[in-house]
Length: 132
Image (cartoon, rainbow, N blue to C red; front, side, top):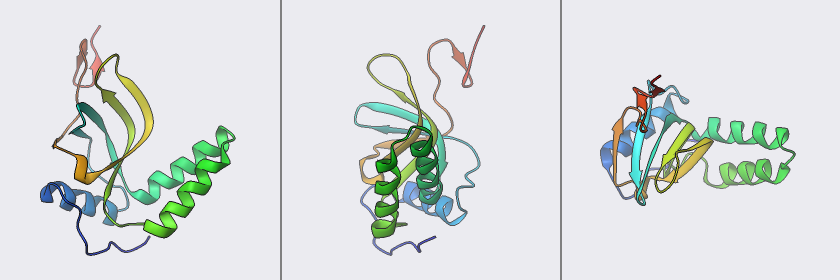
C-alpha cells in the first residue's frame, strides 16, 4: 500500500484522521458511517482505497468492463493513498427519490459537510433492518 502523503485535504480534521486510520488498518473500520454531502445522505462501511480498487476490479471482471479495472489501477498508481477520498462498500444513497443501494462509493473528503459513525435508516427501517 502506498504511504499517505503529508498534504491534508480541506474539510473536517476529525474525519480525515479517522479515514487515515482506516487506511492504515487496511480497511478494518469497526462499523458503518453516514456522510452528509451535496444534499444527500450516504451510509456504508468505510474501506481502504486498496480494497476499493480491488473490489472495483472484481466487479469489472464480472460485468466484462475491463476499462473500470484499468482506470482503477492507473488512479491508484498515480494518486494511491493520498487521503483525499473516502471509500464505502455496501453504500446506500438517500436523497430525492427512493434509497439507492450501490456496492462501492468513492467521494472527496473535502465535500463532506457532516458525518456520524453509524448507519442511516429509511422509512420502515429500524436500526438498518426493515421492520415487518
